[in-house]
Amino acid sequence: MEKIMIVEDDIKIAEYLCSYIEKYGYEVTIATDFENIMEAFRKVEPNLILLDINLPNYDGYYWCRQVRKESICPVIFISARTGEMDQVMAIENGGDDYITKPFHPDIVMAKIRSQMRRAYGEYAAKYGERMLIQEDLILYPERLELHFRNKVAQLTKNEADIIESLLERYPRVAGRQDLLAKIWDDEAYVDENTLNVNMTRVRKKFQEIGIEEAVETVRGAGYRLRVTWKEGEV
Image (cartoon, rainbow, N blue to C red):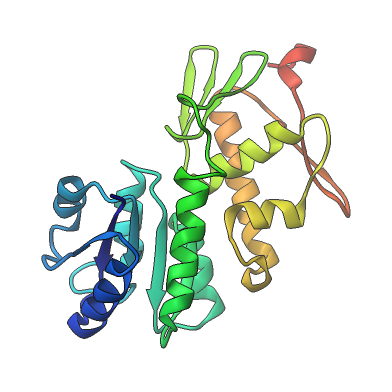
């Protein structure tokens, strides 16, 4: 049975979500110790997390970052915050989707099913650990690691998603809208600057492992991977 963990300090909302989601055959756990969310996470080992932003002690952004250090399980933020920057922050801190309060429970279930399919179901890799390889460059999406010869860069989920798209499209261009859709289900609500910020971080991760100018900006189209190490530039 797939497990869902709810991190929400409004107990009425948490219990409402719990009872509704359980109708669809999921095992649901409500976190109650907001100082030790990661202890509950390790104990439950959920397949997906529903995470509020406004929490006691530390906010949801903080806990999402902690989860991302250990897991790539889907994280859906549910928050009364409706600002665009709140949604951008959710992406930047490792979230997969964002639902604003008040919400319709059917929307929550649709988002849960979508993320479950992407992570574990028909859209997920079926056999073993995935690797994307280009010469000496290896991306491990599930580990959030980029390997080049004897060097390793630790990635955020967004960085791994972008590099995965670049590798999949190489030597073709990865379009801006395609990349936005890769890191956020509803790219219509994401500021264009979000992708620029993420691309800057991706370039730095390539530099960490000794590859300069790894990503080329194709004006009016998107981005393309440059395998500069083949050309003797590394």
